[in-house]
Image (tube, rainbow, N blue to C red; front, side):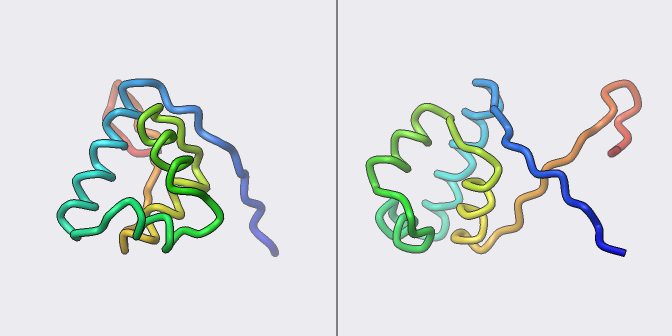
Length: 88
């Protein structure tokens, strides 16, 4: 049986977007990776485009996956019940 995968883009709200952009930039600094190097690893985007997306906190799930891979990381998106703290 084949598992169906629901693909969706995540429109990040400003607070979450800022958190992710800061996290991405911190990991890049820790790994001594420039934005130019990031663009080279991702491919299919320009330096200006990625820079603007990070500034506007406008990244979709696919872009976040590509960035995570370029950083040597795994992206995890979870739904957590706010009342119980349980990961759903």
